[in-house]
Every structure is written in C-alpha cells, then in structure tokens.
Length: 375
Image 1 (cartoon, rainbow, N blue to C red):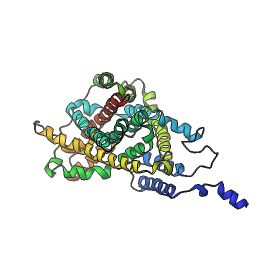
Image 2 (cartoon, rainbow, N blue to C red):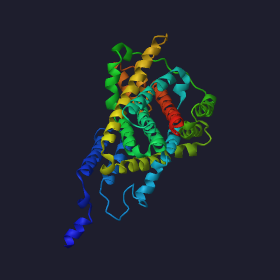
Image 3 (cartoon, rainbow, N blue to C red):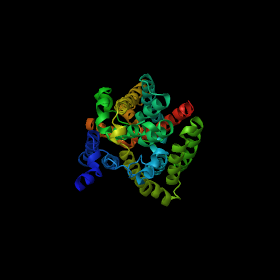
Image 4 (spheres, rainbow, N blue to C red):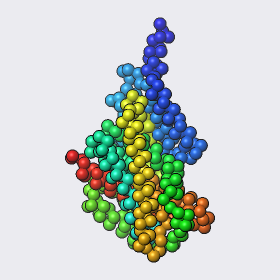
C-alpha cells in the first residue's frame, strides 16, 4: 500500500507517451548542440527546458510554467510579457557593427527583400484558417529571429507562444542545414564566385549618428517596432559612443547571456506534451519552415534582380543573409563562397544584409502588431 501511494505521488503515474516524445526531442536538441555545434547557446537551454517541462507535475504542487505561483511560472513571465526579447536586442545592438551596411547601403534592400517570407506566410496562415492575429505571429517565424517571434506572439497570439518560439529557434539553429540547398538551387557557380569590392571606411561620426537617425525613421514608420529597435539602437549607441564601454560590455556579455539562459530554458519548459503536441503545433512548424525557405529565396532572387541594373554585381549568396539569424546566415554565406573560391571572403559583406534583416524583421513585426493589434 505504501509503495502504491508513493507511485501515485511520482511523475511515473502521470507520464504519457507524449511526454516521452518531447523528452526525446529535448535530448535531440542537446545532442545536436554538442555534437553538431548547432547554436549550442540556444539549443542546450531549450533542450534541457523541454526535458524539465515534460516531467508530469503532481496534483496540488505548483511546478510547471503554467501553474500559478510556481517558480517556473515567474521565469516564464519574462516570455509571456515580452520582457526578455528587448533585453536580447539590447545585447545584440551592443555587439553589432553596422559599418559594412553603412558603407554599402544598397545591401539593406536584401534584408528587406527577405521579409517576403513573413508576409506570404501570413497570407498562407489566413488561408489555412488561423485568425489574423495568429497568422501574423506565425508569419514572423520567417524572419528567423527568435526574440522578435516571441515578442510578437506575446502581443498577438499568446496561446501559440510555445510552438512559435520553438519553431523560430529551431530554424535559427538549423540555418546551416536549411539554407545551403536553396542557395545552390537559385545561383550558378559563376554567381557564387563573384567577389565583392572592399567596403569603404566608415567614420566614428557616422556610427554615432546612425542609431539615433535609424531609430527615429523606423519608429515613425512602424511605431510597433519601437520596443525592439529602441533597445537595439540604444545598445549600439552604447558601443559606438566609446564613452560607455562598461555598459556596452555588460549588455553584450553578462546581460545577454543571462537573458538567453532564462529565455531558452523557459521556452523549452513551456512545451508540455499535453498542450504542445497538437495538430495546430505541427501546422505551425510546417508554416514556419515554409516561411524560412521563402525568406531565403526572396533574398537570393532579389539580389539577382538587382544585378540586372548594377554595373558592380552583387554576389547573390548575400541575399540569403537577409534573414536575421545573426551571425549564422552570414557565416553560411561565407562558407559557401569559400567553397566555390578559397579567395572569396564574403563574411564582412554578408553581415550588412544580416543586420539589415534584424531591423527588417523588427519593422515587419511592428507593422503586423500595428495592423492586427486591434483587429
């Protein structure tokens, strides 16, 4: 009798097959992070969070992120209330150099072109029966920006926050797997070997003025982007002003690392099989993959379109860096460029559409929030 009572108060009594599936998924994330080096800073916190979140809670004990008063629920509040994403953007701003983008402004267009995946997936989600708010939150997965996806979901469709967050971060981690086939499919060997002209030297004055002017323009165009871009450009101003190095160093190291741990673990812990393993979640994953593929295609094809009018041709591979998976998509572009021609160094140039993609995805999220927030 005592053994039976003990069993009934253990997690084994409430364990379902779905929990085992999700625990296996969490372990797979950890495996990919350690053995394949797929975004370990994201996949290890998320993967272990998935494992923790799928230990069945005992009745009467507030343990899960969804249990009122549990410790995990307070950590998850940073996700639900959209607190963590702006802090991530602050750290990104403090570590980002916009020099290459400023030296070759036409590359900004590639970051904008990649956002086509967001709006086409939005339309596809509407067609499949999602509400406008849900469709907007799903579409932003195509920006390949986990914090932006979480922020917009928390504002428009908090009920879909778990699957959208996991989908966005999963595709960010799988950039080296998803993007290369698309890049090879839509470019020729000759195009992949195009060398880019060395960027001009950007002055300190330009670097300091840029975050202020860029924020004003972006926030006035899409007020909904103000939270994310305000923190992004504030972090960049801390870096480029050269008089707040302590603050910039804290933002790009201790702060962003701490928030990444809390955000990743909390998102992973929200994937309880009972609420996560649904047909709707699977559909969101499929739509997110389509969104990411279309965004990559959009960037590459737009670069090819630009080349019809440019004397100095752009390497179309740079268009794939228009998604805002910083800096992974830029690294993938660089790796493929080197594979085709060992003397073709594209990383610096790829960072221009890459950081433009960060800005573009935040603006896209702001537009969707402004348009759908009071739908």
